[in-house]
Image (cartoon, rainbow, N blue to C red; front, side, top):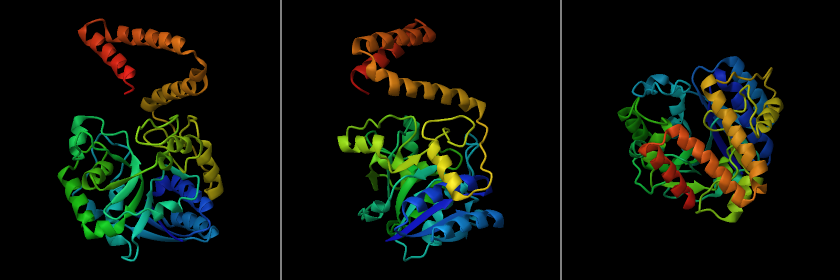
Length: 343
């Protein structure tokens, strides 16, 4: 079947882009894959590396050099030093891609595909702008307002998206996204993801969590899913998304990073290198790893009564750190209440 895939990269991210593309090509060899790569001034050397890999798998690739002057009305907030304006390139897809292309799968470069994902192209997206995996955001009421969501509305992660270009063209979504990005320039919490959620609120299709497995998460606790969904997420995910600051190419090991390095090697990228982790993230990643391993390997074997006692002990330490004043006790009591009712 026809399989249109899109992503964006620059010279600094070619190693990661090639790993992602290689994982798609390796696990979807029975399909006619066409890659649409968005970039600005990507070097000839980088294009040659990517094209040679694509040719080895018998796929096709087209390069789209985006005119960044068209993004002059959009800016990145100072709180996002690691993001570039390239994060908005995908908004140009309706005008860049041929009208004959009705659907396209968008993948961030911090993604690894583990399986055949052609089923995504069979989803009926009539009336939906995108299909994506439910995200943990919004993180605050202010963030919720930026995305135009009501209290019980869901948000989606923009790292893996099945895009309905027919809907985008019909509803002039490109114009709507740039207008809102311009209005909110420099204020957004999660940049393009906030814009996408704002424009497609009420008009996005929720994908199973197996299309957005995140390392160091044992299972997604969402009562709307079935046991089969949880089982697939844990034991048979289709896509790994190394979201946020937990990246497999850092100089600190994380669970499931072996998949990234497997496809980097298979891609033929010369001399793959690790990136030094920023100190502000290093401690957080270490603590997250410890918590993950304790929950995964130790917690299932602890008797429930002992687990409660240990939990109370650690809560007491937290309470001490808060202070025994009214505010500290309120935080402790709220934590216990939320735990009791499975929040």
